[in-house]
Amino acid sequence: MKVLGVLATLVTLIMTFGSRGVLAEPLKVGEAAPDFNLPDQNGKNHKLSDYRGKWLALYFYVKDDTPGCTKQACKFRDDIHQLRDLGAEVVGVSVDNSASHASFAKKYDLPFPLLADSKGETAKRYDSIWSLIGLAKRNTYLIDPEGRIAKIYLSASASRNSAEIIEDLKRMKDS
Image 1 (spheres, one colour):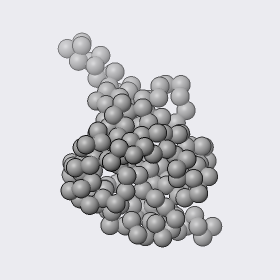
Image 2 (cartoon, one colour; image 1 turned 60 degrees about the vertical axis):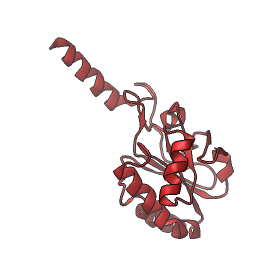
Image 3 (cartoon, rainbow, N blue to C red; image 1 turned 30 degrees about the horizontal axis):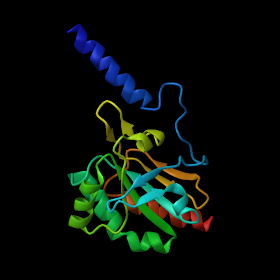
Image 4 (cartoon, one colour; image 1 turned 90 degrees about the vertical axis):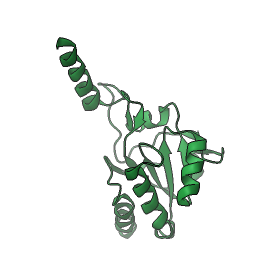
């Protein structure tokens, strides 16, 4: 029983303080977004600097072809023209490999890159990894054309995330 208590405490601490550590500050709006260099479903590498001059919806998701993640990806797919009309690109990131991403993208006709963060290093830099289980959290970062974090969507809604980004982009462009 004592072991279970210690394990429960450990899990609580990890969930509370996240994967960047107790002393690490969480990412904040206005900060430079952490760089990344990851392969997509076709083996092409993507870096944050590739999106300079555009808005970027960088969304982290748990796993390819699972109900919530599929719903979120398909909503981004369905809203891609509105997002692009607002000057934004969409990029998904999970710990799945490129082959899994290729199958997922093909099955649902996803018109945007899915990046393979197999070691979870990029997800960790974005406070978006459950280190205990090694899966990404459902968080989204709206990054402005200069590479700064404009908005953070923690525990993003699978069904509303793309619509929220569209609303926020319209509001930010009007201000």
